Length: 226
Image (cartoon, rainbow, N blue to C red; front, side):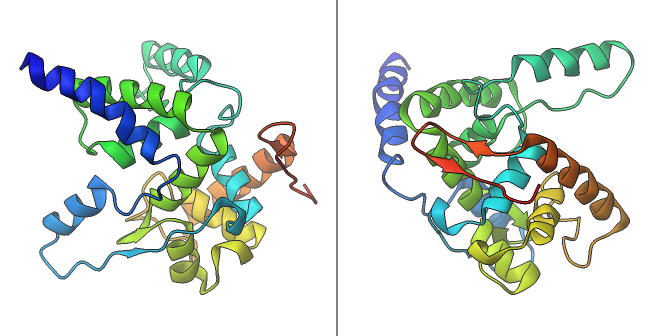
């Protein structure tokens, strides 16, 4: 047991570090969905660089999922405290996972909740924040997350929902894809349900308020027109 733990602690940072340069070919969730399906389950997934993903989609996803993504070190303490306070006031306990945490879970772990998985999620989140850039985290996130039934990543989602490429997604199309992320296998991006449309409208407001998405002084993605 001790040897296994030592081996894990030695090898896991190398595993994470390798993905700083190597594109993630598949995720545990893809394999799980394949095994769970009673019918033929087709996986649509094609990796593209961050520069080939619509800046509108980058901004829409950050505004939808984690507006302090650029600022925090993997964990949004303010969002966690707010979720706990709301739960104490009788509201349903909601998630406060950041894009970094979701990336750690999607790439290295399994979807079902447990204290063991949560602990490993914290560990891998710490590693990717230390070993990857924010741009790389977002690039891997946008290429790995589920965006429909059997649809993984921005390029596959753009082709499936709007018959276009990830780089050519319009602001409205980008917001529609971001709107379904809470439950991408049940919510439609196109045609949009009433829920999707309401969430799109909210995302548009957040995008306008957020303004320019800046990773660092050398790398700047401008969201013109908001």
